[in-house]
Image: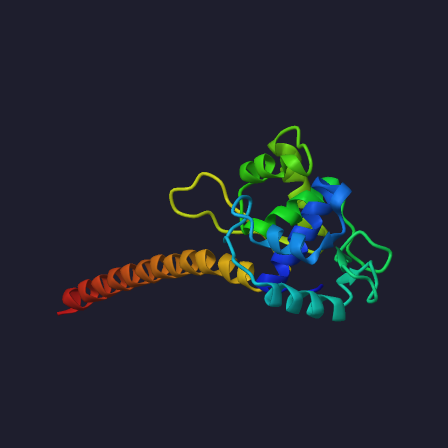
Length: 210
């Protein structure tokens, strides 16, 4: 499974988003892609990428056959499309709901099923949260391509993250490590309490022998 840097996630996410939401202007010119990457809405974090940075990412993705220039190298204006998924050249194939979820996770990071249902609306209409849950379950079984994170303190819903980069995996491990540490502490306390009871019983036995 391809691992993407944070900037590669943003570029691939933008190309998927525009392919679905504005097919009339897809594939994207370099300027259009820069504007999409730097949008202040539907992005987390908000970025301010330069032309050079985006072009460098495109070059790297192109070398890995994840993006290509459909206008050709001799054209006056390059136009880029992703080959990340749903192509005859790759192994990744998602239905409309799964693709919308992957796109939103690439663009905005970990989110709850409720947040995904609302934010995916411009890409795919989910009837209710149970449909989002079904797609998330499918994505976890297929790859896994997404992971369920430990629920944050004070939050009602757990978040989900994609597994196409390293950051979400660390995010998933941090809450789990905290829970594990708490469980280990509780177990240690129980062991110490049991040891105290054994010592008390032994002292009583010794006192009775005196």
